[in-house]
Length: 455
Image (cartoon, rainbow, N blue to C red):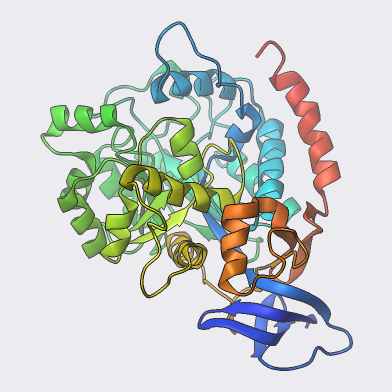
């Protein structure tokens, strides 16, 4: 049995900050949490420690197109014009490219404090739209990227069958995504095999959206989750809401809650445009809302009414989605700042019970993200040793203490405050750099040379 020890002068535990804490780690999991104790001679010692955060929504392949869509076209740009650019870009990628880009994205996630990723994986076939010999070939590649980088993986193979509400036939640009229900079942089975050797890996199901999957198809695939996570994009764009109303007479979240067994295993990604009644329904069923503030701002989606939702006891987590910029702290900062702009207020997501906005955001995103990804949350006995140390001598953090460290990390520094990151007790990041950053970065740059030619 492999045993190591980590000692922190201050460590954020589920019941609050504790000083002089020693963690005994065995086979990647926390075996003992001892407070108010000295470090043992062989222990690695750090000043400030927190749990690693879950990234509950990622499309890793999109990291390679970051920054390429920031030029105005001849008509007004929108999510829908961005989507067309994404379709054209993914047509350039082969299986090796998917793996290389995912590895680069996962390195950057770990360096920013994310230790588990929910990969909403919807590119399944070759560029012609033909299934690989192993239908889960690209899931195998995502698993390989997770293995190489060390990040914990919740793999969410996506069911995608249609181009719009009511089962419209898929478009040419969607050919790499599309499966029927039977073939999707084989894809999920293959995905489970693909990650079976990864520690703590989880597999769920992900109907892409009510645009891309009918209610009947979603109902048919739910049993494949086997009690695990169910993720779906919903109500991201106003056009999506209006199209759903035209087709069904109901709004997307309203329709979802009315027709499907949404519960605590579900993650409703974005849910940007919701009514008061829909907020009440999401809270009542126990679903988690997956918020991706950087991507939602980049795509012009709009702002989720987070203050109201959280005030009613709603669960949420954050994700890097399109991976246009990967920074755990920035996701939390932009979530809060969006509410401030909309409400003309400050510290919108703190509360009388938790006055530190950084702490309120961190705790909620940790708990909600883990809930959505089928993982344990926090530094506790039996949990994976997924940890982040912050630089106590960083200019933004010095002369602060406890929750003020979180406030400074999230609002005054970002990923530059990260020192070390451990996943399952293995140190993957030191002084802010992943151990394999150079090798993975070289491979990534090589594939970009081809992917971006004439882009």
